[in-house]
Image (cartoon, rainbow, N blue to C red; front, side, top):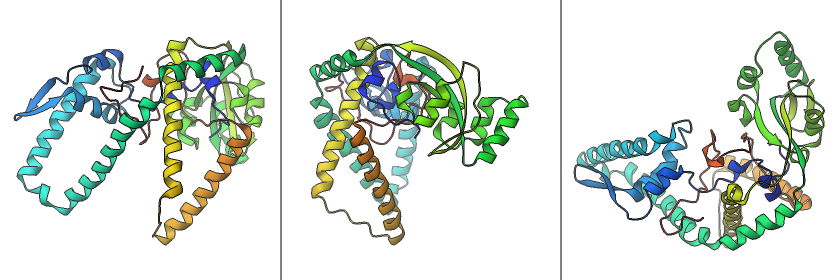
Length: 339
């Protein structure tokens, strides 16, 4: 990850809002349609598909099709569930509910469902409107007119590769195409777009090179701890704290993630977790070493982390392509829908 910090303050100036997305990001009209009474929306051979089931399935489906137009999302998910139940009914008719494969899958899904229910009913409600507002007010005071830039980059492993790509750019090939073809980090899916960021949000060498460019200019190869970068500056502008209504969801989700991490830490402290596979032990040990080193680095800097997805800082964070949702999503609940 290039970014070294993503605090609440950076969220207030519009950087990386969707990276905090821990809750389902249904469009407003879809969310309203599925709230309130748990009405039946469709039937499959007598089985009732209710609004609550659509709500739970929504992000699993739309997360894989982020560019689907909003007006098509609700009917698409309902159709997905119709087809799911048609196949499930066929499987049940064929006796698959008695197989070991089904029982293994069921045990895994039950664990996920219990986890989701705990997050929605026990952890998410701990974050109140007052807490969110306090974070906003505290951080808004720290926000000043700060310059932000929007840049694309192509990350490769060697200077030789970087120079070869620079030659292709000079020959007229498109930056976005080369990024998708050669870049080693997640921004490649966005043509290398990193969105808007402030200088402290990136590692020093990267920021120094990016902020020295004018819009439209491309850098020479830049070396950082992550590899070699070709950087193109897209835009630069001044930013200030965004309105509360535009960032409160992002702040709330960040606070929920903190609660989740605190809970997991306390559980790990008393749990007996054993890695049996010898090869996995070595990998896990190295991963834990890196995780602790990163935590210590973050602790010293008193900062957070972010991912590599771009965000333009000017719209609905949850509606961006590739919203970066992971398995630690907080499932939406009719009684705990937040703010």
